[in-house]
Picture 1 (cartoon, helix red, strand yellow):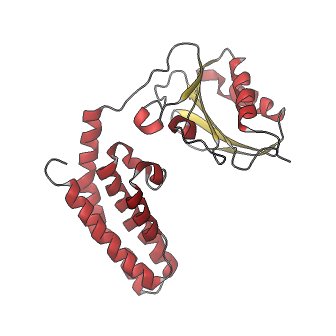
Picture 2: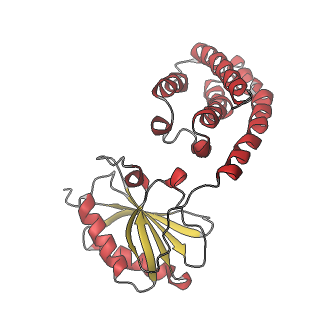
Picture 3: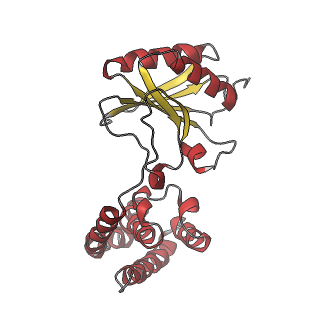
Length: 254
């Protein structure tokens, strides 16, 4: 039986964190930061804590969660640089209402606050006044985008034979996988560089939010492949679109 809703989960996690002196600040990101909450949204909480208090903060949150529901599963994200991230799914909550909890050490400058990338996060509390709206450096970011174009061009040009040869060998799974990774993924990156360069690194994620509806519809059509015959047609179309996009990116004034 589902009894834990989003507001209850927020109140419980927030209360647990407010009771810890080692917590400096907390904000909610994810869908909430882009005004895109719906019934499928999870809860993304980012917490700045004293460097030596990571384990204690996770333990306090987990204790608070068990007052609402048994934890169905916890996943610890391995190898994160500068922060620690864990996911929690509760037995008495919707399968979609997962808590995505990120703890950042007080000494680390990585705050995930750039509006262009992370939206307008909702501040739960800020004891030290550290949470200021941040923006990407437009000059540096534009230079980074421009430097990516020749890299993308060269990689795309040299690797298109791989999905083709796997298709000709009749290896549908391999051909489809290489089409996705070597054709569709760089095509989407090129489209992002054209339409939303500051969000060029998000791949297929947030596609409907970031790109024009007609572009999303066309990408969607290319993403779903029925068989090897369909793959041949869509591979050709995707390559043509990629080179048209590159031409637009490399045109004067772009």
